[in-house]
Length: 175
Image (cartoon, rainbow, N blue to C red; front, side, top):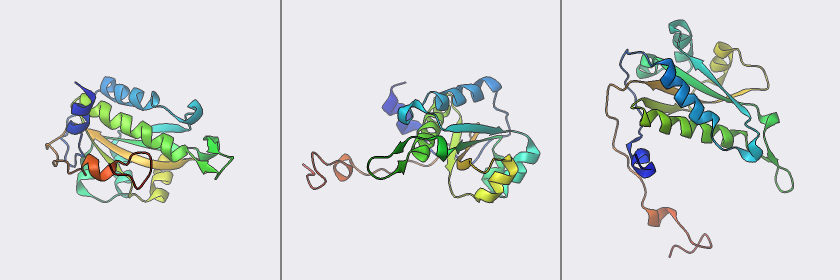
C-alpha cells in the first residue's frame, strides 16, 4: 500500500473484538517503533507491552473509558528525558517527547497496515500508569496505544486543507 493511502486509512479505534493479537503482529508493531528516527539516534524510549487482564484492568484506572478496557493489548511508550538529545546552544529543548511521538506514530501506521486498530492515549493519569508499570523515577509515560482487532471502522478523518497548513519561505507567505 502506498504511504498516503495508509495514512488516510489509519484512524483511532475505540472498539475492539476479544480476539487476541498474535505475538508476531505485536512484534511487527514494536519493530516499527524501534526503527523510528530519533534525534542523534539516541532512542531515549522503551515500550511496555501489557496483555495480562489484571494489568490491563489496573491501567484502565488511568483512563476510565469503557472501550479502553476492551483492548487486548496496550503499549506504553515511555521516555527517559535525561538520556535524550537536547538542543543546548539555543534553548535547551529536550527531544525525548518528540522521539517517543515519532515511535508511537510509526507503531500506529504499522498496526493499520496489519489490519489492527490503535488509539493514541495522552489524557491518562501518569501516577497510575507509573505505579502499574513500575516505572523508575527517571522514566516518563508519554503515550499509551491501545492495540487490537477493530470492532468498528473508525470515524472519517476531518483534516485541514494544505492551504490552511502550509506556508512558503516565511510564516506569512501562504502562496
